[in-house]
Each structure stands twice: as C-alpha cells, then as structure tokens.
Image (cartoon, rainbow, N blue to C red; front, side, top):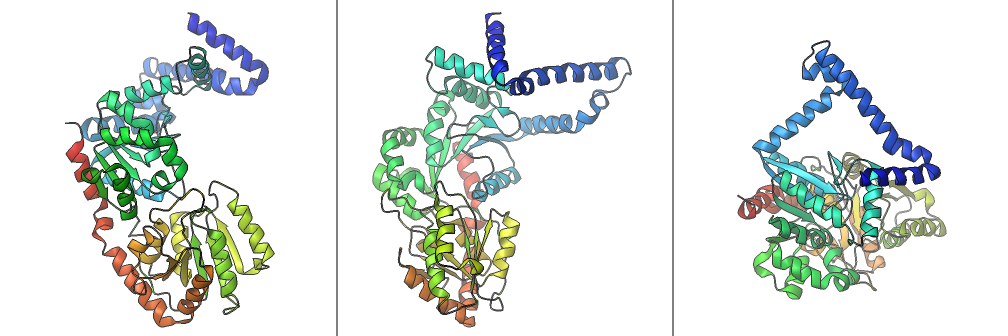
Length: 453
C-alpha cells in the first residue's frame, strides 16, 4: 500500500511538469490493458472463441512469444551482452548472434549500457513502465543502495529464470560490469576484446584491478587480433585463457569481383574516430588529386565519439575538394557492398593515438573490402598488419605518413595489373581463412566446453 501511494505521489509530481509523458507512461498503458482484456474475455467467454482467435490482431505477437518460449525449452540458452543493440559499425556482433542461432542456441540479447538495462524482446529488465523505472531510480538513491543495485538483481534473476547456461560479453568494458553478477549467479562468462578496451590508457587506468578480477572468473578471453592477445598476455599473463578468433564478416554478401574496369574511386568505410584517422585519408586523397585530377573519394560512416566528422567537413572545404568527395553517412551492409563493387581502391589510415595510446583491433571493413577483391592501401597497424601481406594481398605504409599513402594510392590506382592481382590475392586469403569460415563452430566448441550442464 505504501509503495502504491509513493508511486501515485511521484506520478502527480511528474504530471505537473510533464503531463503528456505521464499519460504515455502510466495512464495510456493501464487504460489499454483494461480495454484489451475486456475485448479478449468477451470474445473468449461470450463468443466462445479459441485463445488464438480471441486475441485476433494480437495473435501474431502471441504466436511469436509462444514459439520463443518453446525454443527456450528445447535449445541451450545463452546470453550476449553488449552496450549497443544494433549499431551500424558492429555488424560482426549481429552476425555472431545470427550464427549462434543457426548453430542451435537460443540467444538472449541484452543491451543498453556497459551494464545491460534491456532485453531485445522484453524491453527494460526492471519494468516496461517509465514511471516505475523513475520510482526505482528514486528509491535506489534515497536508500543509498548503490548504482544499478536493483538492475543487478534483475539481471541475475533474468539469467536464472531463463535458464541461461553461459554469458558472452562483447568488449572488456561490458565484461567488467557483468562478471560479478555472473559469479553470483554461478553462470560462466566468455569475454571478447576488440581494441580500445585493452589499448586505451584511460580504460586500462580506470579498470585495471577490475580486469584482474574478471579474468580470474571468466572461462575464456577471445581476442580479435594477435596484437590484442599479446597485450593481454603481457599485462595479465592469461595464456591458457586466451583465444584468437577474428571478427565475423558476411562472406556470402562480400563476394569477389574484378575492379580493373572501375573508375578512380577511392573508398573509406568506418566511424570518424581518431584511431581510424579519416582526416589523414582526406589529406592523402588531396595529394592524390594532383596526380589523378578526376579521382573521387567516397566516405561511408559518421560518428566516432568526438567532433571529428565536422572537422573532416571543415578540412574538405578548406582544401576546396568538395566536388571530389562524397560523404555517404551510415549505410547498410548491402549498400556498403554496392559501394565496394563500384570502387577501385580501398583506403584505411588506422593509427595509435598519441595521447591515449588507443588502437584498433582489426577493422572489419578492411576484411570486407579484401573479400570483395578490392585492393587495399592501409597502415601497418595492429591487426591490419596481421591481415595484409605487403605487396601481395594489399599495400601497407607507416602510420601518420599520409604522403606515402597517397603515393601508393596513385601507384595502385594507375596499374590495372596491381588492382587485379592485389584484389584477387586478398579475396582468396579472406575466403580461405579457416578462422573466419569456421568462426561460429570454434566459438560453439568453447561454449560447449564451459557452459552449465
């Protein structure tokens, strides 16, 4: 009774400030439920309809829920935890989830922050109602329970009630948030490291001790590059727990084609992040225009965590090359593939940032371009140098050397034989890579090794 009164008081306070918000969060859902249940019971017990027919327009969702419940009972339940639900630059996680489903697992996708707040089908782990969520937040602060106190309880309850056998955390930053709750629930944990989560100085300084605790508990640590694997081993001595497994790419979508007949179109795909240095790509392209005046640069992507996108716009204007540069923004994987088919050379100027020491894992777009038979000019950086064999499956230059990159861009672009041979060799290397082809099979073997029985 006291809780109900408190909820009403909080609702009244918010009603004075945000009446529409309260209506949408509290009044409308309650009224909708009353009306929907009234219609359902009328159809069910007055018109004598079956459960399915009584639900009518809601039957599709009802049937989906029933199928999900049935699958949960028959398949092994696993949970994939990630900050983002469906970020355009994290297609490899979506591919992993789809692959695990095809491999026979029921995948619970949890997201919403480094510590997850929501589940892909049931929304927020605590409640679907915004008023109740605000009340829980207020209650947590009032009683000084600590950050995410009730959310952590809900997370453990979710894992237990859904019979989750193992948790897969994407990025070390998610792993350190959930490992203790996995430990309390007695559920194994596999963590995947992808780059900034082990290279960025601020991340390491803030989470060094927590990483040690997480590594002590987790069953396996997956690294998308050997560079990451070596860094983890040197800092935490985890040799027996480490597994090198590159990120997935869609080999069916990114299929080989010959690019020798394509015009002088250079392509960049990725976030506008410091580690990817798109501004240096622009500088390299500006130099390239002096040798190939009709060349074009297509840039796909946008965000990067800072103001780099706008800085690149400013640079393009300052260099007066707006007519030669096309900024495509965020595109779907299919659209990215279409742009790759039309390009002649792919460019990637990844580097180690000077202040925070941040690095990439292995840019997925580099492997996608290689799989398409698109010759790549990139930097000798982290996982890129593990993927590209210089002058055989691509061309590598030193980090920060945008002039050397421009020189190689011109050399490759003007030589049909290089465009063909580099692209052909690159596609063969990627499509023949057993760690990419058997990625899900390898991961599934680890899951079966460590999951609850």
